[in-house]
Length: 297
Ligand SMILES: C[S@@+](CC[C@H](N)C(=O)[O-])C[C@H]1O[C@@H](n2cnc3c(N)ncnc32)[C@H](O)[C@@H]1O
Image (tube, rainbow, N blue to C red; front, side):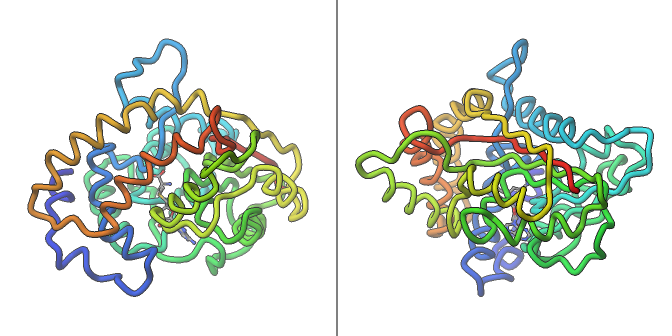
């Protein structure tokens, strides 16, 4: 994994046109400080787990999302990760779904390169194909997947109902297929004082157009053709991993800031955003973490 952190600037400078791609090209390698397996998401805590073991909680998030897709591990299924990062969740799924064909799509070429090289080093990852593209218009054939999921990537979709993302998910799923989404949304509670401005800054830092709104997201799911929608508030489940942020940030600042790679604006933004997040999150603000699952009509 250190090989990835050691990437020279030539490798990380390819995609500088779009602010989104620049963010991920520059700040992407820093995610290694959060997760050696490149799980680019928060963790899920269950009673009995060690709250100090961050990677175990991050891995548990993969397990929780997989559970909600209700796939038969003995069947030959096709699954798509919509916003796959470096494919950590897919590698976790590959170990649990030995007969499945697993696909991931991401907009960021750097992630594809690094994800593919991580897959080559993982014996279970032979069934994984990583594809370049936009999850709102994948160009993949309709009704070709048994399940699709998105872990902390649906937030990048357009609008607060994430309609285009959900329409494409619906198109890609076969009837009876399932979607699973784990992400931060604006949910219960109201904005107080400067919280709206803080949220705007946070979304700028992570190059998100606007956070999803959980009620609108639910309505959109229904509107585009999903049913059996289950929305689970998981704010307290992610809190133990969230508490790792100050420590990881400090460690990161002590090593990376004085390291070989220049601290660009994108890298600073990736330090700032998780510091802002608790200021607008439940219970002090309306932003919460949710796991949403649904069945395609
Ligand atoms: C925070 S990362 C999460 C990555 C991964 N799901 C994980 O949990 O490790 C967000 C991911 O969403 C991807 N993404 C955002 N918008 C996208 C889009 N329109 N199409 C494809 N991927 C997108 C980014 O490229 C990135 O890989």
